[in-house]
Image (cartoon, rainbow, N blue to C red):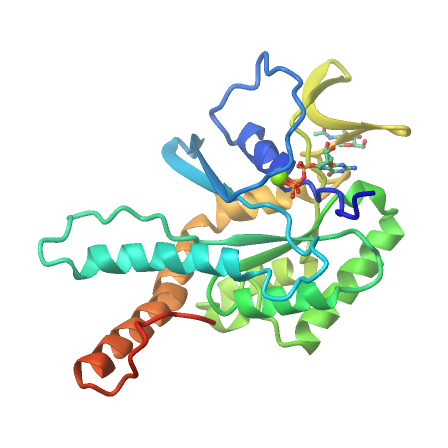
Length: 284
Ligand SMILES: Nc1nc2c(ncn2[C@@H]2O[C@H](COP(=O)(O)OP(=O)(O)OP(=O)(O)O)[C@@H](O)[C@H]2O)c(=O)[nH]1
Ligand SMILES: *[C@@H]1O[C@H](CO)[C@@H](O)[C@H](O)[C@H]1NC(C)=O
Ligand SMILES: [Mg+2]
């Protein structure tokens, strides 16, 4: 029998993001097809429109991890992907005749899916987020929140916030990067809500005469974009409506900058014959 954990809904939520109201992508006539298990890191881009501004949103879907018997270093492929994108950007940047506009495939934000156990974070979640939060913005979410009661959700959310604090895992929006009092006020509200308890779906249902993205359960249809049903809309608004530019700024001025400084230092050391014979291999 397969011991593999069932998917946490990562691919589904990605589709939900693209099909949500902010997106330009039409959902008319999408066939009901099963989302296959994700087996490799894959990026998908769509044009979206927000406040009349068109932009490209790229989401990178990853396979589930932590399903192996030995989960040691299971974060490495994702860490490598993030570093590879930084490296690509760096190479463009230091290129003598560099492009006016460097193509930016850096990972600006990582949505971390916490399984809806209702108890506490697994050691694997702690280790993963601890490492990743040092190189990229992390937004943790509780996956498949419809499998928890509202009380269980509340308890779990609070518990996770305590644990993040106890383990000094600094998730987005990080306190230290609040720019002013107004910023702090807005971000404090978000920090009190994290992790968002989300439900994903790429199916539309007729609810009171309107077509809505929803998820059918025994008890009725969960409207995934309705904030009285789940917190998907908060996540979507944070990522696309209110904080997109800030997320990109912090990714660039903090996370990428750290990578860049470390790499250029390595190069200097090599040039001065201070480094050993191994090629520079960024590893966190
Ligand atoms: N109850 C519930 N089921 C969900 C939710 N989101 C997705 N599912 C279901 O969970 C199963 C797995 O969904 P996927 O989106 O493929 O999960 P994944 O995390 O991408 O899985 P891997 O690619 O294998 O890592 C599918 O049957 C989905 O319909 C959700 O919010 N609630
Ligand atoms: C959200 O859900 C509530 C409760 O089911 C419902 O009364 C309300 O009309 C919904 N709001 C929207 C905007 O659909
Ligand atoms: Mg998947």
